[in-house]
Image (cartoon, rainbow, N blue to C red; front, side, top):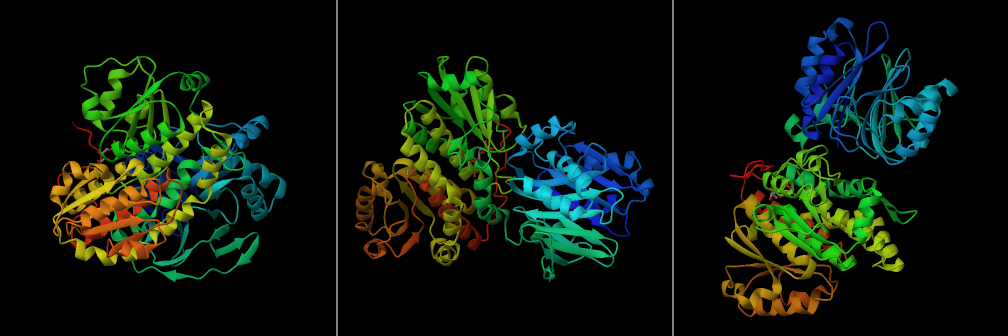
Length: 615
Ligand code: AGP
């Protein structure tokens, strides 16, 4: 997730753009840049790595104000393709520096487009997917002369979800916005216009907005703006934003955590779309070289090293890889793994899982084995320390996760494990063609089921006040959902400060049952899978001790379950391997609303940090 800003008006454009980028810094901040139209009509571009303040210092050092620019575009980057660097920072320009582009989203087919453009003689400076856009547009502007037709032809070549800000030299319009899959908003001021990924960037100047819709192109010049959709001029309704800046950064949600819970359909889609090809029914990990693919076919074992929520997703990864291949998988807390007195055989692959890529224990754990063992990391932050220490990295594309409580990072880790387990199983010829095809097909409309699960939000909000009065909770699940019970308990305890334990349901008689009475509720994970009857038995043993239960299930026969619980959270059905994601989303909402009812500091819980870079 990156941040786009565009401006055309009568103020110094670099000043407006820098201010806007600072407001969008939460969307990504590994590098940033801007392009302005100078007073003699040239495009001038400045980029810097790191925080926006670094770009600001560069702008002042180079005295950009001397160009009296009134039009420009800017970008703050959250790297998905290409390390964080000046070369990879946006904007990106064409060969003649006549077109400059900033982009938020993913161009899925950039690799083949780039090959074609290089063959035509275009020169590339970055490793990004974005850079193909100005070069394609350059060719079509030469052919079409008409900007709108050239844009339309360019967009017809791009596959993926994206929002674009475009600056064109010696052209009227000079500022262009395109919306296809990622948000882009037009701000309308007094004789000035803004483009941005979210309204925060320009709320200080105007609250009059148009939320651009799918395939909208907006052309902006001094006289005003025009909006086109599929080359037809259209009118879009102007709206007035009532949020303040802080509310706007959260997209109108009360907390980042709730915003990030609701970002999961997009985050999950973005995390697999550059790996899974639904037409060809293939899964590709660009990172893996031939040697590594052959290694995965050998008689190997896997050790996964992680902390906290990432340790929970790793337990699900174990279940998935062992279900789809004959590889034995062990999961260890990094804080334990790094100190164990053990030698691993060279045939052991170490997988490090980390949202931040900076967790000290996980980083130290892989440093200990680097060189002796192959290291694969699953991470959400491109270019962070753990990927840099790894031989291979699979990136989740969850976007920046601001709230300390991890939500979309967890579910995107799980879906990466799902694709990796299928990939390995297929590579080793240990899953049938039929299972392979079915597992890929199931992913196709998965985002829809995630959206449907999010619809439980209002019911969960309603039941939470009554649950907030308890001081202890037990979460129980079986099989692949035992780690989900652990994750649900962690979510509740870390944001509401209510004591919560996750347990394998089969362990109830070995101790936890002693805790159960009317003051100690149990959250029971009850997917309609092969262990369903076993879970019903657990419900019976809890109810017979007057224990209150909260059931999360995809069972349609709710009447039968009403005998066990007054609180039943109904979620959609899906195969057992992906069900943990849907159940987890319900548990994220449950912990959020209980904590919100208690008035807790949800995004910044006491004593916790987003990234534990110390031991
Ligand atoms: C989860 O909600 C916590 N914020 C915490 O357990 C976190 O998962 C853990 O610190 C690991 O972080 P990482 O994924 O960035 O390595």
